[in-house]
Image 1 (cartoon, protein in one colour):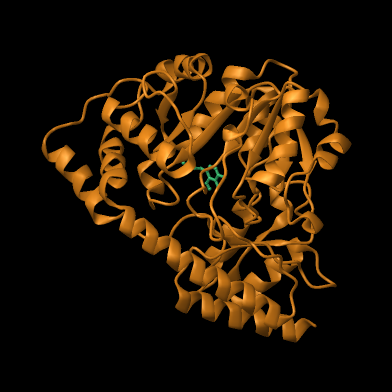
Image 2 (cartoon, rainbow, N blue to C red):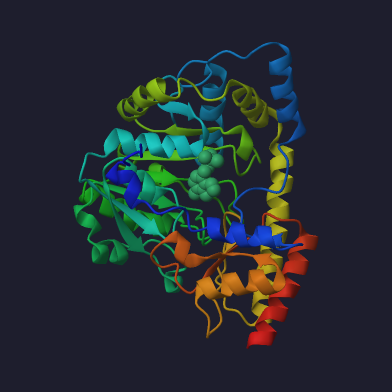
Length: 385
Ligand code: PLP
């Protein structure tokens, strides 16, 4: 017997990044600038708290929405860091990674046939998430001339005025772009005018290297129409512990919790203890990691410029997004530099509209490896120029 797949599942292609991992596996001494996860380990105090919770046998489910102490700590943290005020009783849900929270939002708010506008290039999970929920993704390309910020022009041109929902991710994966308050204001106005729900994936908020992160939910009239996503994977180097959260109005978070309580019950308990400790006592380690990312960012940007590859000034997350030199497509460059020089980067095309002609280069890798990788990319460019 063969399983007949649901149309929704069939229409979604496998992740475009996978092919590059397969090539990387065939070759020795590959330096990967391809992955989107910290090279640091989770701060020790958080790991110790997780271990202690296991030793004490704290291995049961927690409240569906997450442990009350953790929701309190998240409420204090987002208020302190990002000026976001959410009630831990009703307006915060702790999830298995921000990924689960994003999926819950699509399933809670998208009806079959609803259009979901997605600012692109973007994290690869939004489009499939919309399709799995029965919705129709609408690409809204951002442009290098605008430093990959979303603009009202782009929204209008793409027809996003008729969408039900808008997804944006700043600081951005894959471009490293950020949006300041003055850039978010016209987007907020557009969302209010056209009555859009806004999903704001702010998982890289802490990784903002110049100035402070502004959440779109803090702008007038936006709190009531926005769900903010964040989590512990990036700034707290906890990807494998799978812990994230969503913030939003009580009825919206309640709807997401309805799905969560039937499908996940509660986020991993051990990870919740680690996260509680991370918020309580790991600020110094987080600061140190951010400083290191910033040093690497400046190094990688300056090396690309030395090599003669155009790259815009990425100011957030841990990615930069250089242009491929003339004579290559992004796919060709990524494949050839991997085969010939053993450096893995990801073609921008994988991340949707606007990613053409670019590469995503992650600098969540130690400086010695980054130095060697940039030397190899330079050799590759010199050979093929
Ligand atoms: N959102 C963005 C923009 C990401 O880049 C990633 C991971 O790369 C995630 C969400 C997934 O986060 P989590 O590990 O919390 O599920």
